[in-house]
Length: 446
Image (tube, rainbow, N blue to C red; front, side, top):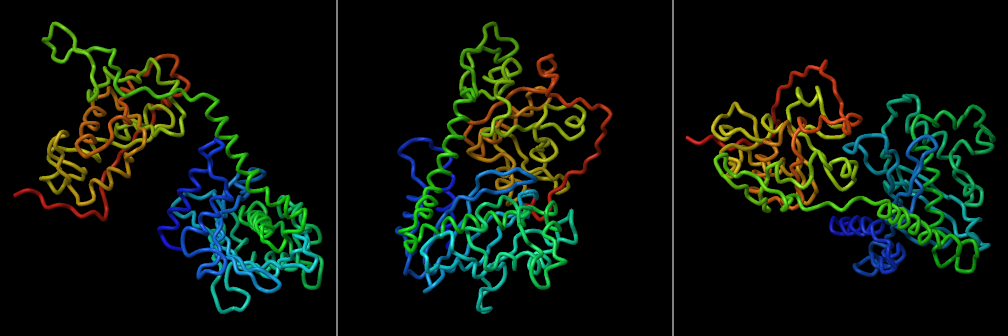
């Protein structure tokens, strides 16, 4: 699959949960588009591509709606070959949460009924001929919490159980604990599927992805006369409605609309000797003019569309901070006026905050990793001064300042209304050394 197509797939997926209007694309329409907008689809060099809904198990008895990709479908005479790519386990950090790919062959039964369709092949390795590597095991091996539940054990003891099973036999199962007669049959008396439960959710998600693939299998024209297949074809739209309803519920729950960062009804003393105050205008990055402050911050906390960042160093942050604020030390990592001239200083920028000089070739790239462009960001420090400086620096480097808020400093959040969301631990002492690794330092000025 090309990078361009992969990006298109992801973009389309991100659109689906957001819009809850009649005009939004259905999952079926997305798949039609994917198979008609390029050299994809039945009979083409890449065969069919589809996005399918997937009831993903995140942990014990917990699940949510997710999506899987079918990048390969080939119709043979009595069966269909598939590849399906899915997230198996979500309990790890994102940097190692790679996708699994299963290769499967599902039969086209003579009855024409989807419930009679069998699993002919299921593999996370080679295809049924042994000539092609059709699958990929994307989970840890072995799982950190269960070193005996290796992929080799899953492959030897669990995967074979699926071979020959019909959709009718599997569609009522929720987890592999529901499997009946797992140990029946020659040579299987000592095999216990329970060895995998609790070790990793991958074993349960194999069952879920097989069920999702069968539902997609039912959309093939071979099953046009089957009532059960017609029912399954509505899975796409039904599950889309679940997502749309959840999105609508989130909107109706009432996240308060964010104001512009600067409150233009406020005034401030531009200079200490001024006799009259100046009206706050856009571009004023100080906390005095901020539209969000200790008087109203609580109604804007806990949002999924905002990044919350504390610019103090780890010593002050550890002693007292607002919960769920990420610590990114401004003076230690972002700016020091001499950083561009002194190779012993690690900060990303030197010069002035109005005209920052990058210390590294990758300074802007790292700045965006820490403060993503296009994201709404709430910034705080001890009194709001470091935030003011960072906002000037971000402005100079091309950030959209209509999305960045100076919410002041920890000193302003001492009221009783914030007591339940403040972590106050003066006993903690932190000694930190700040460095960057693998960056290309720009030579200091002579």
